[in-house]
Length: 551
Image (cartoon, rainbow, N blue to C red; front, top):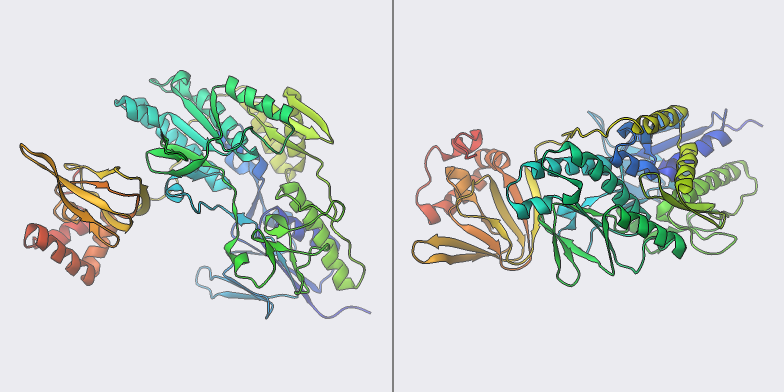
């Protein structure tokens, strides 16, 4: 008998777990008009994350590691949205509106949770404001642009201390992500340094921080030592038993109090579960959704979970599956089979998969690999790394692009173009450690600072007496308004008395608020009257237009 009831399957997440689930379901329900497949992803492409370090090094193009989801899943309706809420009781998912549309309310019969994890700097002061993560395509582009930016500045910087900080690059984390990033970054820096007139490879300091006693704890000791030897030979300073504590705009802060002056800090700290998972009434283990052997969430028939956000125990070994791409892909295929079996009333299968091996790139034609218990290193492992991941890269066109990029990389110099794709920053957060200078007397007054946490001290230079403490500021107070409104240089030096967090507004953002928000204007006028006397009549206009701003 032909089936007439429609089955609505909604998949949340555009990573390996979500996209490969959609691909598996399209294969299982090929020609089944009664099944509606929906995928919700904040991007319209799948990122092949193992090759992101190659993008950083410039050996392949930025778009070569991404594949359009619509091409991989042509029968699936794609919503390029974030997920606002998940209502398991009413079988509904809410997504925000797009251009001129209303919020979407997606009802489902089967829901696949493949939300993965998110970058988290919880408990490490200043990392959210000043560290560079390396997880997605945007992170790779941001890091590459940042590196080129600091090299441009270092090439013309006259102050030796500032120049050394600009040429110091710190990567935190000695696992696969940290090792691959530091290897690619080190190769790229030493290749492009010769294109800068006043920079030599000897000026560069690349530092890898590892909290443990060796690199790559997931691999056998012999391979870890090989990786260490290759990196050290190529100029990477590896510091074991060293843990990152926090960061400021000018330094990486280590546990124990040491500061590494740097303008580039890359953190590959473990990610945290997606915040949406924490709000669900499901059982979790270490923030990941617990599922049964069929990958279904206990107590919620029709709700499934795969990927980094799922706590999956292998049916053969009983051990929890690591959050890797190869496990997410196999889980996606298994859940696709089990959803199809549930719809058709046939038997489901338990998830079982043993990892085929692990590979890690060390850059510059070298890698480490363990395949089926066989340990490989050097050029052979590097060739194997490329061939395996090239085979796994979705899409024939992407494979051709990557192979072309690899061939051209053998004969052409690396590209050193900095792509400035971000808009001008008008509001930013900053973290300061005790006794750090935030602004100096006489500096241009282009930022207004609002204190979020901590205590600051305001000092002013008095002739024949030197610097004198004027006042202390705490949470909720602000400074810098005098220079913003009058266009005069800073009238005082402000430094942190304790660890402090501030929000900074540039002249454009302050001017827009000052001229259009009467309560703010009244507050600033009162503040300035207490410091300087009556506010000039044309101050508001000057702030709004930016005329007379110091440079």
